[in-house]
Amino acid sequence: MIFLLVLIFMREKPPTAPSSTQSSQFSDLKSEIKAVFKNKNFIILMFSFGIILGMMNAYGSIIGILTYALSYGPEATSLFGAVFIIGGIIGSAVFGILVEIKKNYRAATITICGISSIMPLALMFSFLTMNDTLVSVCCFLTGFAMIAILPVGIDFGVELTHPTPEPVSTGLLVSSGAVVGIVMTMTATESIDRKS
Image (cartoon, rainbow, N blue to C red; front, side, top):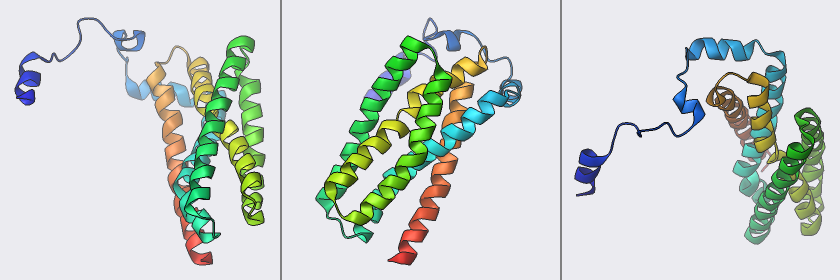
């Protein structure tokens, strides 16, 4: 029944474009991507964004394996994951507001990269202490920076590549994070399995 309703009544396209990006046709996707890759600042952002997003994805994928290998219970694992996400939500709000007020994407990105470089190391050492409070604080601060790269980095990428359509720069940024995340997850999982 639902299939027939969709088949009969659903249109191929809405009568008006849902966004300005949709209303303007991509001239040629290949040329748009080439233009983006000629932008040195975007390449640097894509590299940084990819590493941070990849680490964030890897952390989300291996937190259970890591905490199990270090003899943490399931409650602690859930707590660490939740605190990481809460820190990320707060970090995204804080950095998002700062970028809107100050209009300084570069400073926000550098700050996020700095925190994201230090906190994973602190987090790894905190896991060895077996202190749930210390690990939770490190998870919060790691999430605060790592998840905040999403709104700041994507907006910055759009600004750097204007007038290229937003889906091109956003797609390249997120794809770089996915590739790095896959490599980091596989590497970390293999390392943890060897040590266990």
